[in-house]
Image (cartoon, rainbow, N blue to C red; front, top):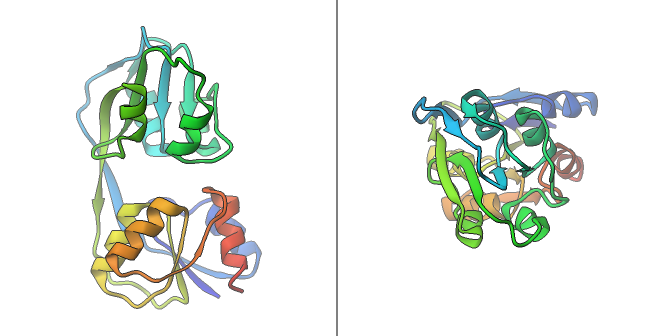
Length: 204
């Protein structure tokens, strides 16, 4: 099966799929750029929350002080920040919210400009935008299925108008794909590389 990866990064998903015998292409449908360069002072917060690898990398670069505790939405995000005290079983804002001890105290959410505000609103958290995501409109190669790992990638795929069915990383991305006119043929049961590999394998 020829699989098109549309996220900013191809690895390690590409390697896993190629090991299973798939022909894997990579054409990003989104790119990110930093928002500001100011240092981010994390001292005084009980929890720092990051929900993406890009957000974690930007925070690590700009962070001043030492966080008391860190919550990361997935293992790759935790690794990008240098570790985390909490990585929820379900890699979503809902999953993180369910496992975060209460009362959480003072919380800083560091993420994308325009990020979902579930955690910010539920935890009365401070929010600092560290980057923005821009949707791209490249010419797409021929593929049997595309993998979309974010709502922005799903919207970009829909805007291009290519009749490529897609595999979604989770419910939020699926909803964005549906709204953009993208046909989702499988959704990852876990919102990570393992879930995407399993979803791709289910179509083989």
